[in-house]
Length: 248
Picture 1: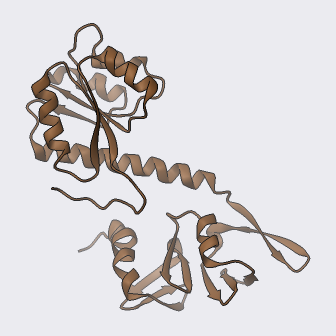
Picture 2 (picture 1 turned 180 degrees about the horizontal axis):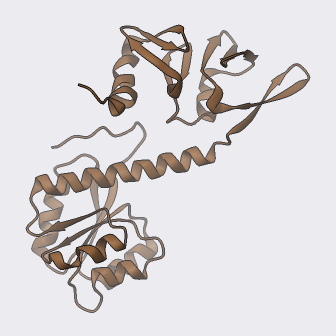
Picture 3 (picture 1 turned 60 degrees about the vertical axis):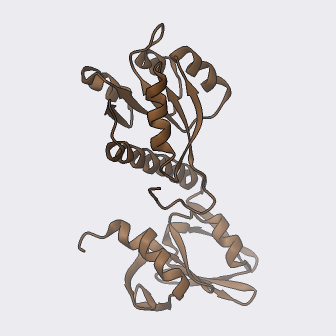
């Protein structure tokens, strides 16, 4: 089985295969069964049947043949207000431009080898996660308020450098100031966008955009040296650093 890192709490993409040839469906099913980030949810032998499924069931990724009787794959796509992510599967290359005009993820020519299938599947999985991340981040208000005595001070979460746990309190650090708030680290993590903040230690939550250096068991943020837990180091490197690494 080919592996790809699935974020904690995530599930494989629910896939639907639409093709009027049973052996073509079987081939894609076999490919899907070799990876851990896809699962077969539905198979359909016509565009009409696929349209009916999409009206009653949530599908994350559709593998769609073009040449089918009554309703072609492209006609099906054009009829959908909110189509799922789609990978075209066909024996005919002349429809490629039409497919990409409809914002398909990829265009696979039959017979479909596993390596080419896997490339397209990875692209779909990464696109799906980007959409989820963008949606979650849009749900987090950029402006927040913290209580300081009898006052409520407006802050911007992206200006937070890091948070430090102090018994029953947290200390929020900014470039030119800091605030102590009555909050737990866990509840703060729930409020802030998970793509922007990383728990490097049980006592420290860091805004990854402000990390200047990761070295050994330390993370440096605006000249401040913070501890990096051994069991968090690998995840930090894989999920934050290596994704933006330009030199090996």
